Amino acid sequence: MHQLNYVAPQLPRPASLLGQLQIQAAIALFIASNGHLLFLSALAKSFLTLPLLSFPKIGPGSTALLEAAVRLSANSLVIALQIAAPLLIVLLLIDISFGMLNRIANQINVHQESQPVKALVGLGVFLLMLGFLISRVQFYLGGMMTSVEQMAATLATSPR
Image (cartoon, rainbow, N blue to C red):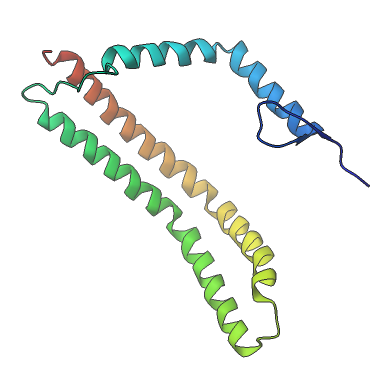
């Protein structure tokens, strides 16, 4: 049985019929919700805020704002690692156990056998963590939004 593929100009390779339907539905939803207008507006405002051919002017007193932006970026990286750590540890333990299995019985194709195990165990751990993840992500995003709003308010009130 052959799968029917269609050429989708938006995608780098041919897509299945269901994939083509999904991409067209996503494009229609994006346009219907005026996402294209929001994107173009944000793009135009970004060129007004930070001109293309000039170096950004950092006024006096902006050091604290820049430090807050750097701290927010660093915190987001730390949070991402904390959220992903349990799953990464489980996958590392699976790799180590299959590596030891390869040493014991080297006639087993460990790479081929470990892929479905890693996928199933990883999905299982992810599903077990899902409730915790949702609560933590809500907490972290709430804190980040507050920090971004404070930075935007500081930026808006600072003299140019």
